[in-house]
Length: 336
Image 1 (spheres, rainbow, N blue to C red):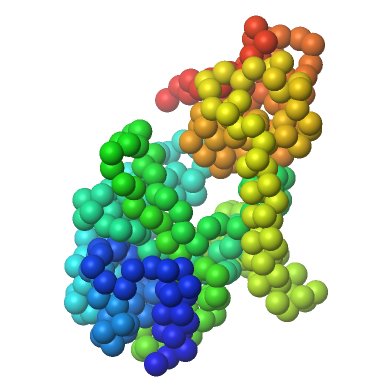
Image 2 (cartoon, rainbow, N blue to C red):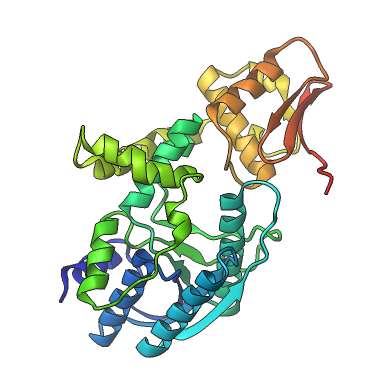
């Protein structure tokens, strides 16, 4: 058994994932990471180690014309060759706001819908330890607090962005079975030894994207100080999960409302106040993407200031308004 396949089954056991009787969606872009995951899952299926109904799902963002079409064709051909069910969808992304974020939202909406349709136990993605390190640096540069700097979980519940969750419906899980042990070099090497020429996204070489510059410029520079910097950053993110979990003990019930009472904020310690503000934003926005420590501190200053009627603008096209002793979140109307 190839060491990459052995690493995957070892992690499968560690995460206590089911070995049979379930359906799982495998998100495959055609890149090395997701392709390696799919091929390794097929190996385990062929060896009778896993008796799972795997369904390959590919989302075409429609951003690269013929190149995107070729990615979709590659994934489809590979899925058919390996004997997996396959389906795809072509996206129509919003032209306003952050392109990377819009693409991510559209992709995860598609995967959630696919999992719901197939009554799947989980969606599997090919995130590696490199993705963990890059995300840590992105959030560090943005000034995120412990919550933003803490590691992406290997397993979490998957929620739809389109509609409220049906309380009677069990949500699929999002599982990243490579993230805590595999590096990008490992997935590329496994593809090579499997004689598979994976797809390369030209947008992954575009320096206008922050993640690309971090991957191509910052991490190589940091490796001159610490050759194991990717592992170090990923492990640091894991340790910061403990710090973030400590904040879970603060009175977050204060935050689960449309309005945030300023008088209650004033009674808290600074660290508690920051945690409540973060949780209030998460509750009303559904996520904390784009929110940095500067936004949290600006909202804190707004709350503690003596004047009413002031605002703080936050991503994306939103503002926090102070009025009548309360903070409220408002959407900024954008003209087309």
